[in-house]
Length: 163
Image (cartoon, rainbow, N blue to C red):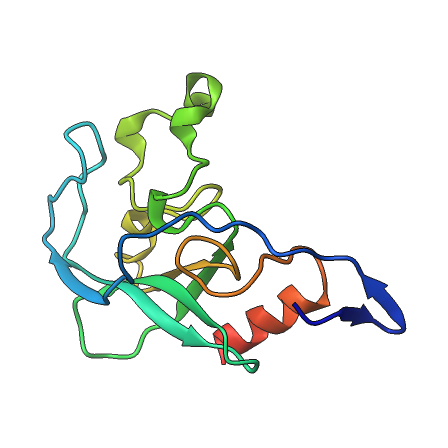
């Protein structure tokens, strides 16, 4: 791993051990119909939603991040809200409300189950005309690279993902 510097100060980093994956993820496009529930207890989707799972976002250094994109079922361009998380995209990470005492007071029926931890629920924002993009940050899930948080490197990654 190449040294990483902030101004002239070398930042100590070491490679993390990534969990083994059976095979690389493939991009998937799903049409989720209005009324669909991820689980029997989850909030039903209020409208048709297109889910493009595991989209690739390229960064300036060649690393690729994975993102789940939720959007209205339309060909029109819509504004996007990007959720950036080290906790796993779209309810797939280690951290979620089910691990919190009493689900932090949020009933299962209030959320669709497609939100990332501490993120927005697509079931709330797609009917309002937005797309929701849940990104696994560098080194998280199937995103490439080594995790780096709260620094200029993560800021550059966020910029590249938006562009």
